[in-house]
Image 1: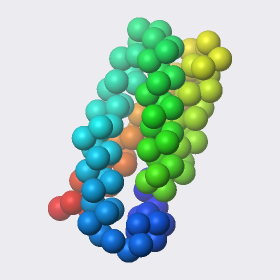
Image 2: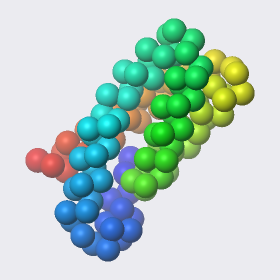
Image 3: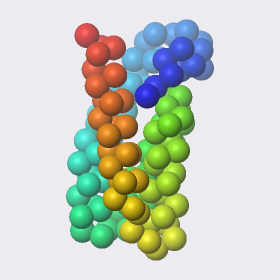
Length: 108
C-alpha cells in the first residue's frame, strides 16, 4: 500500500502534486496486474522484466515499499532468465489491485 503521509511529505504537502502522481500511476499502470498475468502465462520473460522494472520505480516514487519489493522479486527472477514463482506473480498482482483500490478511494 502507499504510505500517503510519506508521499505527501515528499511532495511538500502539495495535494495537487500527489493527485498528479496518483493519476499518472493509474493511467500508466492501473492495468498492470492483467499485463503481468498475461506475460506470465505466455512465459514472456523480457516483458515481465520490463513491466516489473517500471513498477519498481513507480512504487518507489509512490512510497509503496511492499509493492516495490514484490516488483523487485519478479524483476530479478525474469532478468536472470527464470520464470518467477506463481506466488510472486500472485502477490504482486494482489498488491497492485490493493493500491489501485486505495487510490480510487482517495479520489472519492
